[in-house]
Every structure is written in structure tokens, then in C-alpha cells.
Length: 217
View (cartoon, rainbow, N blue to C red):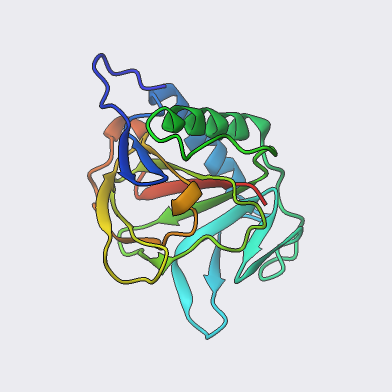
């Protein structure tokens, strides 16, 4: 979906993980940002996530389709305003399926899921926000995870399946990039140690970074 004349090709990062630079063109980025701003409004809008040991995530988050909370899923915002979760849009699932299909041309360990995508987590990063190393392990499905980035670039740290420690690779994700991981990388630890504030595209009109992660429950 990139509109560049000579787009940067997809790049395998590790077995089962592929970076798709510039996958969303300008129009698609604007459409996704408009949708995120609508989803962010209450009820079931952006919230600060409290962790079981008392800490709070520095990113603000909302869910679509199923509500994620540490560490499970529900149909209501059980750790917030108790509202029903907003529906998951079919078009976002179609984007995710298309991204997996493209990533699979670079890594045959990846394949579109047998079931439709039905979850999205939307994370908003201000200039101070970070995301510690973690695994997306609360889903029953082994289907690939698809991540879309908007706004400020970030350093995305993609690690191994054994621990939060090295080896890992740092990848800069820019506005419009997609990142797909599944197969042997489905349970790899990953995180965002820093963003690059104020360096996102001015034409998008977004201060900070948005990340939309699409999954199958």
C-alpha cells in the first residue's frame, strides 16, 4: 500500500518476523488516525492501564473487539469505566490480513490466520512513554500479530522467545510502517525503549505516536 515511487522492500528481522516499511500510504494513515481519535473518546476510550503489582503503563490504551486487561480479555472495560468494548472494524482486519499476505512473500513461516482478526489494541505514546519487554501471550490463537505505526518514529526492540534479555534487534518504525510476527516468533519478547519525539510527519497532524496492534483471540 505504499505510495512511494521506489518503496523500501519488506525486510525480514528474524524467522517469523517481517518489517513492512511505508505499508500505509498517506490516505490510509489519515483514515487510521481519524478512526483512532473516534475510538479514543469515552465510553471505553483511552485509559491508563494499572498493572497487578501497582505500577501503571506509561502508554495510554484502548481495545476493540475484546478488551485487554492484565492478563486476559473481557467484553467490558473491567479495569475502567465498565463500558462494553467498541466493535472491531472489518476493514482493519482486512488490512491486517493483507499485511500478513505480503509479509509471507518474504517468510513462508507466516500465513494469514484461519479465523478473522477480531482484536485491536491502540496504544498512544507521548514523549515520555515507553513499553517494556513483554510477550503477546494472552490469546488462544497462534495467528500472526500485525502492528501499524502512526506519528513519531520509535525504536522497536524485537527479541527472542526465551527471555527479555539479548539477543534482540532494534528496528526504527516510522509512520505508515507495518510489522508482522508469527510462527516461531509469535511469542518473542518485544518492546519500545524510546520514541523520537517531534520527528513524525507534519502533514499527519499527530503529536506523539500511535500503535495499532491487530490480533486473533
